[in-house]
Image 1 (cartoon, rainbow, N blue to C red):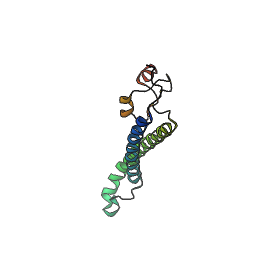
Image 2 (image 1 turned 120 degrees about the horizontal axis):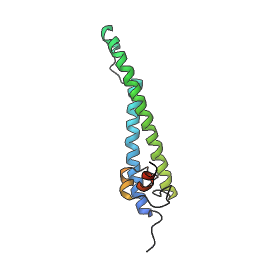
Image 3 (image 1 turned 180 degrees about the vertical axis):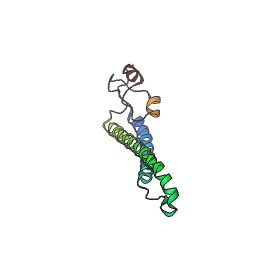
Image 4 (image 1 turned 90 degrees about the vertical axis):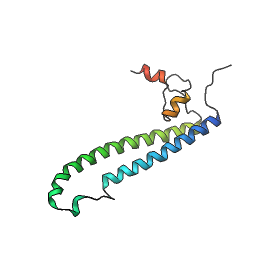
Length: 125
């Protein structure tokens, strides 16, 4: 029997559902991080005495920087998931961009936006 060169339409539907679930959660997380950065729902120190304000401004700046980094990372993850959805639609999803072979289902379930098989990823080191 010949080696499979792509996943079946049924398998692609299964992967699409997984990707959509992860995408929905990622977007929710991103929106939460954006809210944290902009303090649109904040209980900030502006309604308390100035003594606490000085102490908290440093922590707030650090917290905003961290939230900003996390938001950037989350946005990149969302872009990768959207790319994976395009590959599902093109029926090229799950094909290693280095070897041209199928990426294992286990890897795709763990990292649904993967474009490299474990073997190709390890050879990059």
